[in-house]
Length: 225
Image 1 (tube, rainbow, N blue to C red):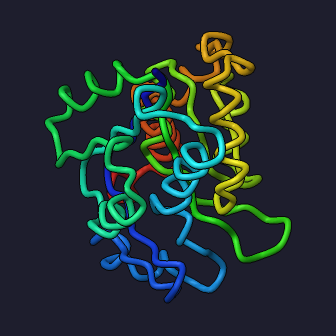
Image 2 (image 1 turned 180 degrees about the vertical axis):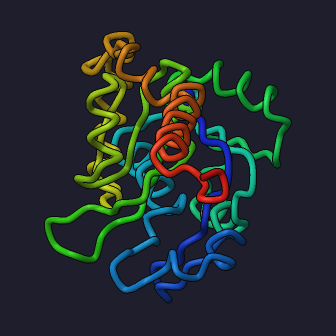
């Protein structure tokens, strides 16, 4: 069995109305939602449809693949799973303490990262979720539903990225089928530890401290003169 894990906030998306149920952070930081970004792909909808294709077209069973997601998962995702009679393929949960969440991620075979889609042709989004760095530190392969972007480049260089278009269930299903059939071996993805290390919290903190030190050394307080 292949287990796909996702932790954190996940929006809901209704393709009939094009309505998106946003998590509270996106509602609060309203500038994040602008005319250049289609955030409907930052939902569970397209993965749900991909699982449906695997079941209906390729006879993939619940004991072949499981999606385990927990955190602030919008109820619309759960409703869509139920409407497609896919409950046996999905495991839901609420927020977990940090360490418990990391332990659950460690048990998964593949980590899910659905990303926003740019409305501007040939230009990916600039948004890089903090979850990416958490995922990279696990050393596990990451299924990124994304287009060309800085986030995709980081995943490619990390050695852990597996990619599919964010809004194409058939192509997502095709990638998952390659994994299930062993055509794509998850064990073949090896973390580029040296590259990943530069994105660690400790290194980023050290870089920030160096910047502050530089600024202080080159801009002494006038009151000291």
